[in-house]
Image 1 (cartoon, rainbow, N blue to C red):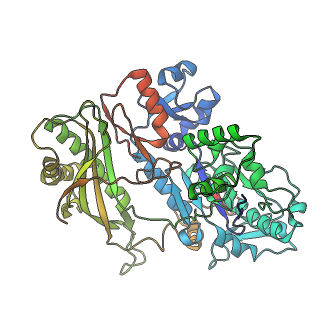
Image 2: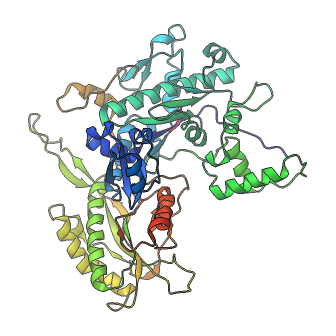
Length: 556
């Protein structure tokens, strides 16, 4: 049977992927590390390393012992506490969102962003002067004509797939192809500009894929790494009047597992099926929904993946720890204190902002910022995962209990530790007693403390997120401001805890990243670290300790 292949020509979607993000966070904190081989450790495994370390023979998922043998000079830093990575990710995403019209920026984990720049590209395409393309100007703000950067609109910025095309051929091709090429060309220059701003002002490098869908941008972004970008050139169409679809040519050159949305098991099944049916003629069959979806992914079609509008505030915040053995109330209370303190810190980081009062203040008065809450959660939830009895197959069942979150938690003048002790004594311990009676007789694998039911109290940043681009350019001469580069560059009740769905491709963000439960120790492992955790068990045996907070462009 046949299946129509529809590519959204006029959308402009890049994927921005920060290079070696975990290692880069440490490098930005300590710039001297950029010149040294750096490895990030979780348990006894190298979860990631910088490119200098890779150049010297290190790789992901190596044992720390082996890494030291291969490279005695390696600098090893602990990366089990994900707080610094989430903070850096939040800062970078807000920085980049300031440039994108309509807040069309979607995070994928902590180190990837999808950006829909269709509106920006459409506006700037209409302003191109066909008689002087070499001296074009990309406008970043409709209201501020000087906010933007100069660029050469006669050529794509950065590498392309396929490489080295004739720009004249594409500019003079069929109108549909020429139109798409111009849009991708402008998107490539915007991608290059954003990469430059990210490096100059924040110290991070990134790799970008430029195409018309999230799927294509994500896959093409892997071609040139690190600190580079790749634009997937037209034609995208599969109709007979075009020579060949670059989408199909590109995807045919990749393995099935490289396609986002197709996991390892499905990849193996598809490969086995194709091998078993090669050279045979099959009868027409009914195409199921999942079959249609897979067919589309393999042909570069991802019509259901619109980039969602960026969200300023989380729907919930949770802190979780896993344990090899937690079977006494004193140990549980100590664990709850640690988790409660981490939760309050996270609330202050994610739900507050520095607010500059400008009304009723003399113009020469010092701009002393005050910290204010953007949202206040109403509900506190405690979830546990009891270790199953021997012979039981249910090792993932969670139970939880909820109560109202007390208002004193929002007192910013109180210390985190003091608030955590009071919260555990007055709220968390009663919740725990309702889940597990007695001071012993149970053994827990996981403790999770969460706040939910967010209520905005200080106004949403939805319509003024990040910085206003025009204002940012005007302030560049003010002391203390980073200099931008302009140029080419209810009633409590006990119930099962809900499970949050997540993409297989998500990164490491606590809310968005998928986790899996280890069948050996019960730890909730971030998807990206599953292989490392399995390797840890294979070399060190079952875990018996506490893991520290194992929480979790399309571009044109």
